[in-house]
Length: 147
Image 1 (cartoon, rainbow, N blue to C red):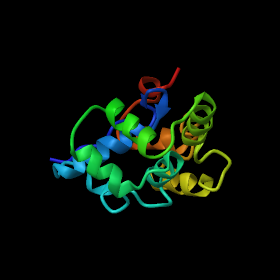
Image 2 (image 1 turned 30 degrees about the horizontal axis):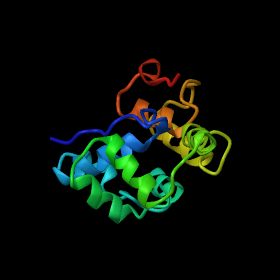
Image 3 (image 1 turned 90 degrees about the vertical axis):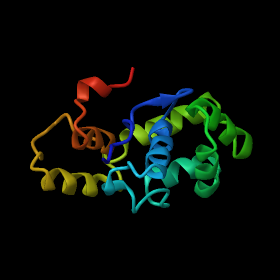
């Protein structure tokens, strides 16, 4: 059985997307990650790659750390110790980037293409890649809104 990872809107220690990336690593290691995500794990031009770059950690090293066990908080702390520690300003920048990806940026065309593929070009509640991911994985927009 394959599973979708956590929503990109979930947070660990105030950082969005990180729980999803860690969840994908765990699910993949157990052979449970939905096949749509297997080929791009940790790829540079994905949110996984962007998140690792922002934290200044290598994806392969992060994967190894995740597979050693621990909570998302433990693993993010490891990232802070082995990459860079984020301050409130860094978190603001990352969360703004990750939550708005696909809205009037270089990913906008990709988002529109994905919406066409799913016949939802009329959906005005799917404005970002995070919105689309939640839609695609069956989560309602109301259930995943961040505060």
